[in-house]
Image (cartoon, rainbow, N blue to C red; front, side, top):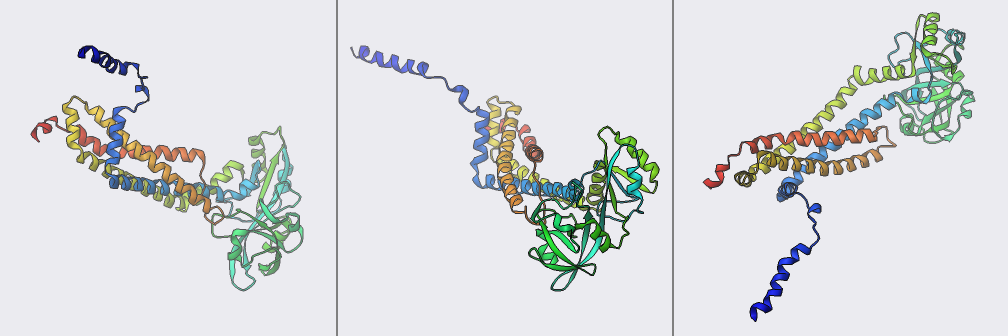
Length: 404
């Protein structure tokens, strides 16, 4: 009777597991669990690893963002005043390496077949005298007000038509302190002539320390001492049906003492000069390399230390039949998990820094492709750092389990 009474309970207990919904597909694989537990077993080591990766991500992200921002700042004026072709003085290294053309270039360009328009642009160095005393050098830029590509862009106070009045200028808000002004209507001196601030821009900054000062084409010629027909550059616009290479060759034939560049060529030449020939780009690249080295060293040291601390456990797995590849997967997953956490935290901190730098002279840009590249670099860095731990693992002798 007792057996009969207990039999249903025993049957129930035995059949219960078969009635449970199978959730094996939702469980983490054992190799992931091992990696997770190893990673979080020593909280201090994990913290050091994440901080190292975070520092590396922030440094590489900011340095890359500065490089990209610098490239864009170098081409700020070229991008704001696009043209199909640029006629520039022979030997011009970059946009802010100005000199004057002879004065006949506009008419010669206009006479070439396929040309719709050619606009003068004056760029010149000038001396700015602050209202309360002191001088600084600026880059004076003048364009025609009736052009659809008239500079400056992004005016937040005042207006572009106001620059057509004599002795008027526009500057960027970020240069107020450098130029000794703080609002519309302030006065200063430019090359010995009194000028009035009638327009203010936002985030129109130069790559160098020289502030941009915008004015009309006539005022720029007067302040720079150029003749009425002279300009620093010609912005040539072509007819829709014109072939750019054919027109370029024609203008080069007519103006042998100049260079005729496409928009992309002039942009690239200016960027290459400042980022490659001056060494500015090399300094930024060195900062990125330093960040990668720091990240690799810290992650490698932590993973190696973790592997050494668990060497007996890994040896036990080997003795139980686990292959070296299985244990290598554990280490690689540890590295990838570390990289994911470090990347998320580091990129978040980098984005905060980029946000607060928007209205300063330091331009930092982050784009989706750059963020994706940084993610790949971070994961690759962590995997590369795992090599030292992997070498230690594959050399484990399972016999050490039986010698303990």
